[in-house]
Image (cartoon, rainbow, N blue to C red; front, top):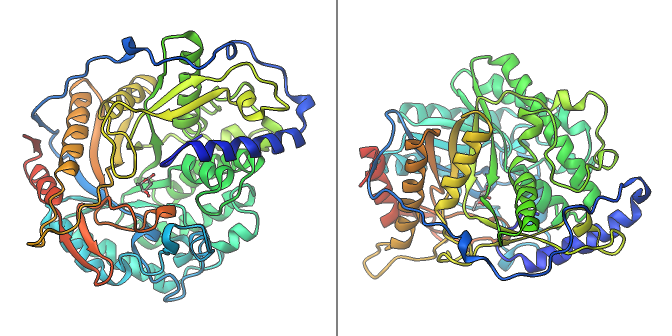
Length: 508
Ligand code: FCB
């Protein structure tokens, strides 16, 4: 339901597996709910839906606005087996032939485990005052349980101290996809025990650095690691099972609620949020069926991991909620609740949704349960990763969340683009397209703020080129260029431009 890069192949795989899984599942218990979803055939996009959208050419950001970059442990640290670190599902996945483009791995990545001082210097050169980074669970608990590995704690503790010294806010993501492999061996996220294991880990980290870290995010993009990791199989751990997807969804939602309370029990004053990858879900045409499809897409993409926390229920994503397949027990929806202090939004592109036709559940199980086709937009320019540049998506999502959830505090925790420009003859990296991207997304954000959204910060993805999951080192998203042979970092034109915006707190 989520997509990264090309959708066609991913969707075919998912349908195949939904068919298998749902026809093996207790289908007799599934009510026949086709009403409102059927009858549509492929239509041509309705141009009347494309509304004019104007961006301010300059804008001041609120006083105290946070300007940052985001990274993730597996994507930058390297040192995959140093100082007592355990194996993660990403180590295992990347070491499995055929999983990652060009056979790349994160074994060394940007070597930030050793070069973190250089990385802080990059942020200082860009005038940044916030750094969103993630903690590697297997560096703290090599086998997913038991006492903390002191060397792992020391690494993050020093990093936090150095950030504070550099006047950069440390913003910690507790889980950015690198689950200890031992916990995957015990069943992974579909196993309910993981919620408890996660709380133990959260408490270990909070005890270690909670005296200096005030801003926390419980998960990064659950819909990416649950959907793509357990249903589509192109991210670690690479499973392809609808039942695993449904169960993992629910366990992660419980872990989010319980993790929130576990952290607050130790550090009540902490600001605790979570990070969702969101997308503006637009109907392909103005037909009622496509509008309904767009609402279903919004539910699965944007609120599947939010409503259990904020509303104590699942949104209407499917034709019916497969409670027993998901493993929902009585009292669970109280456990998932968490009054998050802020919402982290990662936004890159929009999604175009259209209804699928009337289909039989036995032969087309995916369309039956989730009768929506989702694709990327085609009107805007594309990044080198093939993602459409569509700044209005950021405005639309921020405004919708502001309306639907009573003006929550929002942090933009990621937005960015892959453009693969390298150094020119003089060694400079002329990545004007990246400047255009951030300029437009920031202008869209400024417009949302001027219309009432409470947005406190923007974190460009990413500080420096790094390991882009299944795409290895083939996609460069950084504001700084990394020569992966020498590990030399060079600030790109975009990094200099971003540093000026940060220093002036203004887009001009
Ligand atoms: C997001 C991930 C991040 C990075 C960017 C490009 O979905 O959170 O780690 O891969 O995409």
